Length: 124
Image (cartoon, rainbow, N blue to C red; front, side, top):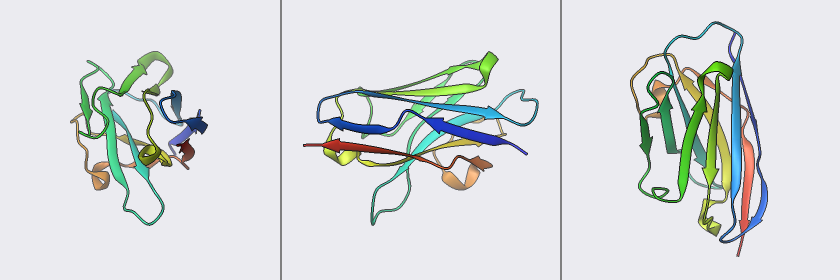
């Protein structure tokens, strides 16, 4: 069974930064995609960013391009989300997800495993 454990959420003022981490464990991994999604109160879950394990190809939602950076440490099966220039509208629960298929995607149903989520709150 795959486990995804997120960390790094918290409260930050607008314009500040946070770094989220997500570590995957529970099986041997070869190629996969890890992604971040978020869900604000009263809204649907939305895609944020994704990265491939092998070559590090990335995909971003338009709303975070230029502000967020996704990266990975393949040896540790860990993915990071560096969030800069945070805005109040970035406030949400952020979820890490893993897709065992090696194709970049922003579609939540394509992902096979999900973390429990970590709260990010940006105050104005």
